[in-house]
Length: 300
Length: 155
Image (tube, rainbow over all chains, first blue to last red; front, side):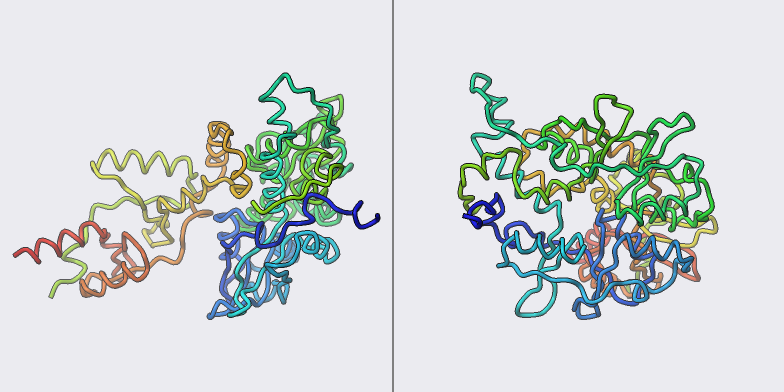
């Protein structure tokens, strides 16, 4: 009984179905500035560090890079000094559930998939890939919210996940006059990908993400500068706690962001953060149908 | 012996590393109009004319590609106009030096034309800056090289 109850949308899905085969890597010995350019250019959160034969040696993430920024390391420092080694792996035939468990227990946001013949990396699995799989199943399901909207005369009596069910109910915010170092400390202390920046009246003005801090490092912005000088976004992307999960994911994909700040009844009062990682961790699509009816998820 | 100087064009345009991607894309369009040929790559130089990198069509397309493109497979009904608005906003706050390619293959004016051809095919590049004594002398385009060689094959 217990094992049946534990089943969810991902129970019959394998890593190979969700992983990406395009891996962005940098060669060992390159400098941090080089790694930053790759991270910005390819819009990734981490790079695989490999030797001349493309054999994986480690991983350099935005977190490692902002750590180097905070430590005052010169931008031309070799990435070998800041990479985390060795990379963490899962296997193509592992279940997505076990990969998610490993990501959670190790506190990482991605796992690499080795080629069993060569030992080189054949793929990478990150939270957005898992959301992609979940979303595809939702889209093809007759019970999905979008299908229901297309056929208006079908009664929608399925309990659906709301943002409230999956969000992190905490927001870290700073005034726009605070130093970059303080924002960086806050972002790392809470293990958040982004923090809210408020204007002089206390209203949400912008967001500072790890990407913004990585870019500030590349631009040689001093850590004691006011955080307003590194603001890139001119708005805060948000959703309501009562929005459907499916709609919030759709909004993130459309606006090319990894997270939305969540407001309650008062749209200027942020009460949480909903990210693609949160969406992946819920391990189901947008409604309870997959779980409650034990629908077997077939290969895509 | 034919060398890079026989096929290079000295009409090339440069970008400053500090300008935004939005300004760079406008410059691509303007230069293409002026030269009456579509430009797919531009050299990035510092104020003294030293080569810093290159921005190509590929770099800009990478910039436009949605971050979560792998999720898009199941979202065929989404209107991309909203996404392009986002890209435009980001293009105004991203500088050319953040997206440029810094590992640029170069040749000298005296590089043998077959060595230039080999480099272009091997490295999959369509344009190569010709550099001598730290200064950019011109650009070899794959199309110019092609017609240069084809004309001589026909003779």
